[in-house]
View (cartoon, rainbow, N blue to C red):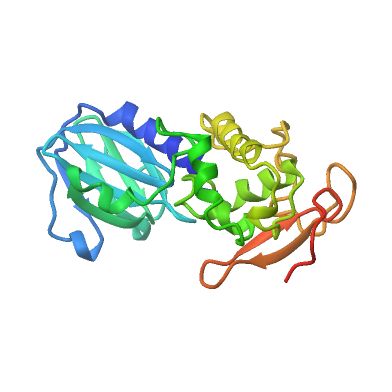
Length: 264
């Protein structure tokens, strides 16, 4: 699931491979950039911002992309595309040593680096960024006390990087029902700190583990485990849609470990 930790690791791999390399060819397979070309530029850095990826070039341009649910970036030495069907390719950056390919990446844009805030300036403190501030995240969350905590945690304007997987796991570990109103959560700081700790623990690996058990099928407590027994108490895991279309998401919780009001 591409959440903040996946984007962080993707950025690190791209940054380690491509920084200070010159682009000798570029190919943008999205209509809005069909005639764009960054050949001749040198990559300065690849930076994650929440769930967004920013590739900065030395001509003060930034390539923006978002992984959403199905996007990925891959990099390899040589000229062979590093996995994925050709029809899914949206961006190709070629350097003398590497080929970097964006598969099904979304919201692809090329802007002046100074204009990055127009794309990511609305985001709250980044759970894996240098601007992380748990108190600021709490301050933003409590501005809407009547909102459900499940929806509030997914709002990137409050804290950037948490997605549906970590929302469900953080609330389970915190013993909070997803439909609890923000104003009724007695202490939000441990919640956002737990989110930070989970993403930080997983940022150097592709697997997302919240149970401490990396064995396949044992990594998570509730996410995508509907009707399976809770790992703590044995109660079948509940599942329901939360949020307003089109941004509603399947939400998972244990009714015994996370007591609360019935789902609306």
